[in-house]
Length: 635
Image 1 (spheres, rainbow, N blue to C red):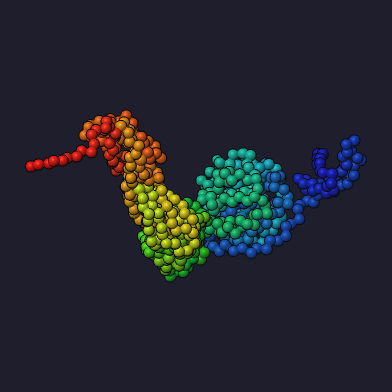
Image 2 (cartoon, rainbow, N blue to C red; image 1 turned 45 degrees about the horizontal axis):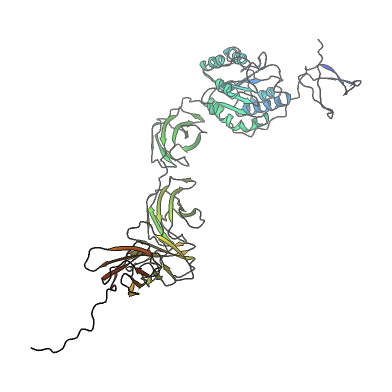
């Protein structure tokens, strides 16, 4: 029955391992060099495989022995398909040896059988085959590598029909456990045979390596999966799961036994990181109690052991606001009772309450708050919201007993968002937030207003202390909503305000501007004067029908003059408008020998009008008699 095999390797390889050979068989080997033009003559040789692999080096056991009086029958179901390979199969042997080593092997203790599977499963040895740990370990060390395809479903049926049998050593009252070790996805159905095994009371573990399908492992294994399903990425990582797996296997072997459990579980004194567990002991004496606890949402169970005299225990280092499952077991000679089970939820972390901000100044403020129960410290963040300079969030931390602090080196006239957290070691509460604004810089500017006219005034002040960048002089009328603003160099202390409205009250604010912000305003008020009337009205160049009027300007900023004239005693009035730079006018077409009244009114840019400047002049007429004299006067 000759079969020709061929393997192609790279041009730089000069060694290769031939696998999947038959034991005790002579093989001829030929090596050809392959070139573009063809093949070389072969280099030939011959070698015979051994009848079996050399036994593995004995495994030095360093784990924790499973001490129990319980009897258990364990069947190991090992994937021996070609995909594992001989070198990796040695790792599997060592892994199995570690499982065997934790148990006390014997006909009235723990029995371990093993089946290997690929295309067709076969029993390597039955439960009753080895009655001592040494003989069982020797069998593991000499376990042959089978080879073939991955038919896990067929293998599960095999151990149910051929290994878990009383005639093969299974004991009716012993606990029954199956452990699957596989490196691939099954090529047949595994759901039905897994259900059948579990329905027979067989507890199943599933261990996947490298290419195993985790969802398939969970379909096979007994729940909870976090203690019955293992999946590693490489054979070398099997050592990483030995401790956890053997502890869970030991717990499965021990089971509940005949030990009475404690009763009346009560949880109390819950805090964010702990709660107390209290129970009533069973009637019969126990060696100790085991308390197991883990979050309801999942996670690795934590375990604590307490003495036989204890009736209560505070569980610590818990997660805040988390519901925990708590199980209390009685333990006698390594045997555990059924658990006394309950749940408890830790409290949320108490936040800080009643944050109060006081003593607010230009560069500082004080904060106090109610202490949070159990807090180990506080974290305070203060963030300038509307800073005029680049600024970032600052942090202040205090101890758990300090609940009153002063924040210093703040920016003036700046809103701060204040956020405080209670700290509980490495945990942080929800925040409590407040806002506060620092006071602006206060400057007593001694504001003085002088030289007030109808359209201007001069503003004077004392220099502000410190490094003033500039001054802002702001002014507005009562009717106006917004201030007009004038910037003044920081070295100056006065400025004229012009183009004002006459007879109007102005509110004036002086602000000093620093790098840190603005000062509080120094305020003042002043009312502009009435617009001045023109003056000194004079007449000249009088004729029968005209004369000239001349006047002095009311002010340099007169926009227009309104001129009116009329004969005295008549309702007829004449009016004209002249430009503000005109101060003389010839009145024509007048009635001879008539007295005229002339009024000059100044009109300013803000449309304010002055009082009238009034004068009279008579036009010339027909010459009449003159030099009237009287004489010879009698009674």
